[in-house]
Figure 1 (cartoon, rainbow, N blue to C red):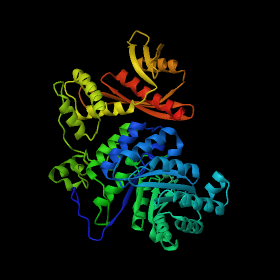
Figure 2: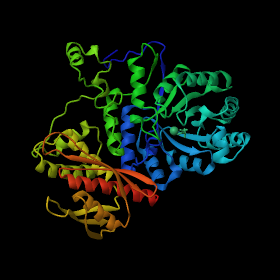
Figure 3: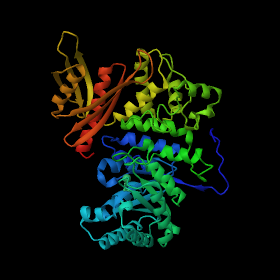
Figure 4: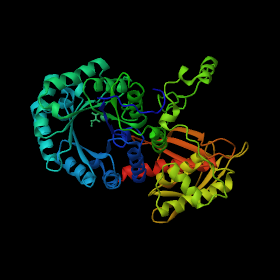
Length: 516
Ligand code: KIV
Ligand code: ZN
């Protein structure tokens, strides 16, 4: 099936999609989202139609708790899940964060492999089993919807796993998740493990079996699909496959594989496929983690053909070299451009088409930014408008805001920058610095203001649309002590975009360090 037609075969079973972009995905080095960004991603995940959103790890910081709470209150449709280690404090925090959701789920995890038990906890397997059981019993005081994960299951002793899972099921776990925490498994072996767990763990037939695959060997999607064939009915996965180290299984790849190869896998998901492209873009922009051009399903090249033979074939009939229609994932929706003459109504309308739900105050701000952009650019493309909204979300609650910027550069002058930043208490600080170029000088001036010796690991700039008046989008990868953080900023002036990206990263860093 090449187009978007859904033909669910009679007897096909549903596979639940558990999205962990906001939890395991946010553990990608540098990928920190603020409160507004997290809520926006959750809103889009609901629109995408995932079944469960793992919104975060509430005990980790007050900021995380606040964001998960907001998601639980505002996002309707999917179940909202909070992660907790198998200890009371974590479970209390997770429940506090998710209790107002339509369908709250507690996800409790504890290491199960000898390596984890010995080196992380210095505990005997029997003690770990007891702790897991106690945690599930405690969680069941709050809800019936409890998921249990024996972390590093694929390197655990299998007989021990049987015993542990039987015990946590008896204690009240309704979903048993088998994590391949370090991406060690290979498909046939992993599928067989899921099959044996189904057969040998008493009570497993009353649970939903879930899998959570990491991509260290590039096998996360293949392992997840093999697990489905062997009885898994919930897949934990992330948009664009982001996550710890090499990432997690990519949600869009799994869903599209099940859909395109329905003749092989007789399963379906409830995903709104036409929201895939927008979700991928949103997550990539807000986390500043770009999607590789050759990434399956959502990469820039996934639907382009360069060889003459392929182009010729596709022109004659798309099916010659294309198994997925870009329209299936919402990749080709044409939208109109706005100009300086477009009014609030047209801007609002376009924002709705782009999938943003803004309140009046946000709309006023975006409209103001739109007017000033439309003064500089002949046409404001949907991508420009999207960039304005994302900039607004990313700039929420900043510790430092750009108040004034001036740079000097030229073939015969020493590059220099004057920067004035406004702090939360409305006071301002100004500094002057020189550098190897105007951007370096501006970054040096910011470091002087904050007194932090922040390093710049990576810098990239792209045009949001085409033409000389295009918005420039800068992404930076910054380091401070043992932390890395990403930042992004846009402007028609690339030096201003660079400074905005640096400030975006800086504000995230300060929030993390200040635990907020
Ligand atoms: O990779 C892992 O084991 C996890 C668990 C918390 C499920 O992320
Ligand atoms: Zn994980």
